[in-house]
Amino acid sequence: MSIHISMQIIAAIIVYLLIMILIGWYGYKKTASHSDYTLGGRGLSPGVAALSAGASDMSGWLMLALPGSMYLTGLGAGWLALGLIIGAYLNWILLAPRLRIYTETANNSITIPAFLENRFIDSTKLLRILSGLIIIFFFTIYVSSGMVSGGRVFDSLLGINYHVSLLIVAGVTILYTLFGGFLAVSWTDVVQGGIMMLALLLVPVFALAEVGGVTTTFDQVRSIDPQLLDVFRGVTIITIIGSLAWGLGYFGQPHIIVRFMALRTAREAKPARRIGMAWMILSIVGAMMTGLVGRAYLNNEGIFLNPDNDSQHETVFVVLGEMLFHPFIIGFIFSAILAAVMSTISSQLLVTSSSLTEDLYKTFLKRKPADRELIFLGRGAVLIVALIALALSWNPDSSILELVSYAWAGFGAAFGPVMLLSLYWKGMTRWGALAGMLSGAVMVIVWANTNLYQLLGMNERVYELLPGFIIATLMIVIVSKFTKNDQRVDQGFKEFKEELKANK
Image (cartoon, rainbow, N blue to C red; front, side, top):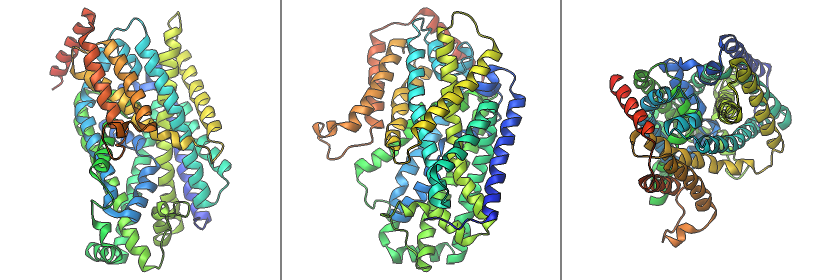
């Protein structure tokens, strides 16, 4: 379902894309060192860190899939959103302040693999290399899927050729990420996060006013199908547990938790959490209301978005925008969808680039590289990864999107338990970390591709992140109990605890 293209819509999109490029240029001027390029020199304010973490987390799912699911199935689609809100909140509480402190006390680590190596003083380099390879593999797929989504959005909604759309989305994102680095990505995330939230609030509010208010809207939704207001519609206990388990993934997402490391101080995690959670809750509620209000509003107009026709129901956000607003505002709404896609792509590109330069190149280099050399290589790595992802996404009908179902679970199971226990348990060893990382990733793949759940007496398959997370945690504990740490590891943990106490 395409919307009518006008010069106002195109103008709004061009303004948005130019703003992203200008921010990239400004970030380029502010980047003086490799630490600036990779982690912004640990200088992010609470607001920038919070909005950057949120925008890089929420991709097209927030703008298209969630409103579409609410339109189609009603409140029963909200369990996943609830799981994500709980997970994000716990991530800010449990990880943010501790990770900010420990990554600095552990030899000023600026990537997750570097932190793990320094935390456990791993002279074998196995932790750093393995975690770096996991990040590069999964994020290359992630970036490719984001490009496919961006290309398809342009193609399906504006009728622009898929490959032209792909090059526009990829080109602008690569440009500001390549030159501006972490600062540009974080600042563009703030703008993109603001656009996303504002659009998700404007559309349902105006639609509510047209329908006749909250009470009238819910009465009309009830008259269409009473089950749309039933939170247990079409769900089982296993479905609910699996949806809530999505929240566990937050503990292991490198592109999100790297924002915690970039905060100016650990104390600023608290105001950042408040800003980030407010943004997330308002945006998710806006997306859910868009779907519900859209069902009532479009029903009054005699329109039904067929779920069997190219996922028409997922266009409810855009369809409402076209019917309610001036073409320039429609362009702004469309830019919000682009913002959701591009903010995630840019964050993942940068983390992948950091792993290539910081975790692989520096590991095998016999000398200490200069800052200018690392920045140059970091930009080169962004370009190389982006071009590989672009090649993978060139075919719009490729199965690349199917692989992404593993990525959130894979990162969550491979890194989540490792990150949590490394920040809380003195007795964790490097061999426990390696065992947890490997077993978590393998369990996700095995669980998703076999009928193991049936052997355990389950009637349906729970989301693979949950068994992966559990197995990884058990393996970390068991292996750590049978191996020992170097005394320097215990001393490092003691210094971290002292610094943590000083920052309370």
